[in-house]
Length: 422
Image (tube, rainbow, N blue to C red; front, side, top):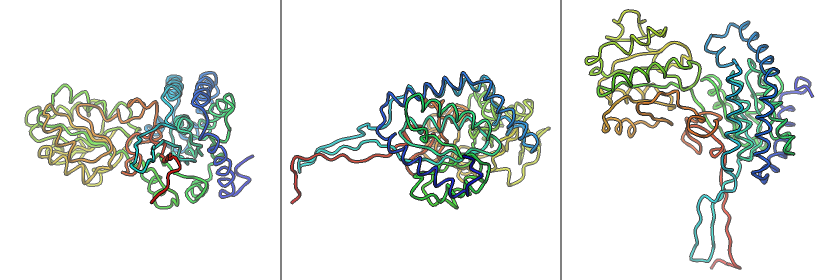
């Protein structure tokens, strides 16, 4: 049935009811059936590569006609290598331990009660995301692994690619004899569908937005159901006085240039004045030589080839070959800057000084803190989770990469023996 034939509220209500029915069955589905569904989905992606790439070509044509930036085109693009990555991710999630039904802790009470805290699915997830079509497979797989049903609303730019990947997920569900409504995708570009999801109390248990500040802000303002916030990735790299120069050069270049359109891309380089005095402008020069536009202030702005920074460049997610750069007075200067301009996503310190690194880790509260490693590792796959739905930057329930384990809650199982309370 074409979603355009229904109002957005009617469409989401129908999908939500179907999802709740599916979630009730998934909650007790065996680990073996969920594993079988994910393996069959991976096989379908591999077998339907040509079909998925053809669908992606339609999305790329649409995106180019809209004038999207090169970085956004990169986020949208699927290649044979990236499809192999999706297949590998689906298989990796399939092989993970089942997160449902685990006894998290247990204890006995003097009253004779035995109490267990046991992991349980959240129910129905609503995932709203922008250009990256691989989220369709990642979110569907993680929801299934954690026993949740999911309603996916991908970006209008990736509607054909996401639909093709969704077909593969449904093929997997069908092969494992699990309800096809366990993984649904909103079949329309109508923005009203997003608003309908945000007010679907009683049908959707958690909304997970994955996208830029505009999308996340909209969700946080309008949602009437709980939200796992995935805010912008305003990631900082701080080069300390005691950084190893060669390590710093490798990490800074990788953090900015490996893929500029991902949320783990570095958006601001902070350089200790003592580092500059010791090593000169080498980090800035490396970035310029790689084709990065460096928006610098203070003494850094005197380096040939840089562009003067504006105040709004600090605390901005460029998602492009652009980085802001500023000198700071030691680690405390870096900490103060990040507290003011960061988004709570990922920060990295480059230093060989254990005490300085410990101070950085202790006094910052971003979801991910790194030492001598690229911020591009801020990814559930790189954390061994197989994949992620997003990087949660809030402080409630899930934080950092949201994998299958983070998509569960818990319940208490209490056992007595005719036990009564005085």
